[in-house]
Length: 205
Image (cartoon, rainbow, N blue to C red; front, side):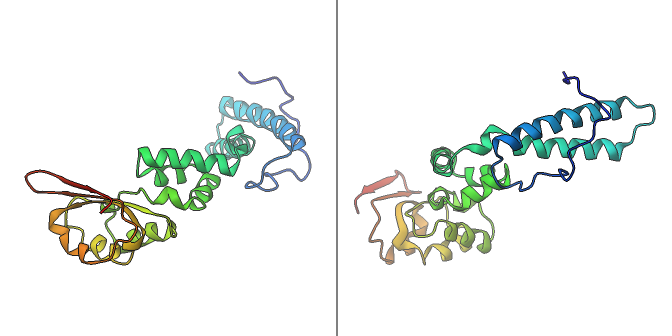
């Protein structure tokens, strides 16, 4: 339901778009934006009901509405530290979560980049190119890695991991990938080898 507001009322002078879409709005800006949203909703309703509808005008109004609603949405006021904790929990449940969460909005994407540990649980064997694998490894900075190598089929992954063995905390690997064990794993606390008749798990190797 659209709150009654003069359809012909103009927007405040100079207020065509949020001053800074990446900055948190002040209380005054939130109130101003709420009023502008009411104006835009009335204009959108009028445009949709017009005899000669302008699709470009409707799309423009819809885009402006989305921008302003997103700018003052409460989710945007979550502290970075809190958001990072949420990301970490999500990434431990779903290793591909950094890609999903980072696609929500610019703020979440920036927060995911600023949370290196969120990238240490990514299932690297799902990434098809050497560039993608190296990008994720770099985003994890120096944080411990939790790696799953279910087969030896991904040559890019095998090569990339050789330069990060010191970061590995947990490694679950296919037994055919045994060559990597010739490297030093000074921080490895759990090793699981799969592919034989039974899986072998070694803690504190």
